Amino acid sequence: MVRHFPSSLIGLTPQGWLRAWDEKGHVYASEWPEASFALRQAGAAVISVEDVGNSEERIEEMASSCRILAVTEASHGSRLYWNGDVRRFRPPDVSEVDATGAGDIYATAFFTRLYSTRDPWEAARFATQLSAFSVTRLGLESIPTTTEIQECMVEVL
Image (cartoon, rainbow, N blue to C red; front, top):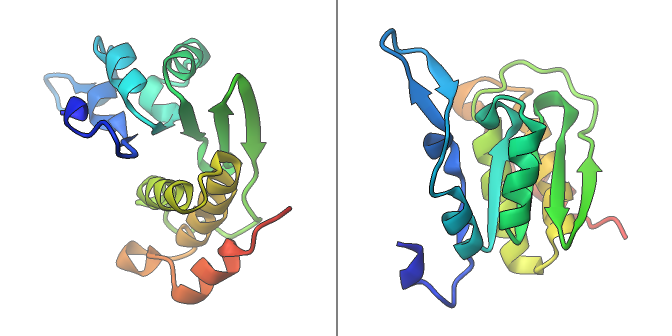
């Protein structure tokens, strides 16, 4: 499918390709044989450390195949691999109520900001800040507010 959009920003969130289920329905990290091909086609990808069973080896392997790789680390924020460099982005100190959906908010914020600024570092900073707000509320209330989005859009130079 990625071959059909050669001039577009292809953003991957390969969570489903990185997981499998056992006979009892328990989810576990699994192999993704097509990873190198798909990641080379993508403009950027977002994964969580949980997606790869906290395997630093797999993260490094994926980063070497991808132009831009963002890795979320739950309450520790995120890190971004780009141009052979890696930077960490720490979230603001917030009281976590429910982390469900925070990774989805991170990915959406990251790809949107990357598309608008063309700056992966800014996109990771923005997504880390915005997704931190989301964990302070339950369910659909975790969707960022206009005020939070505007607050996070102030770029740090």
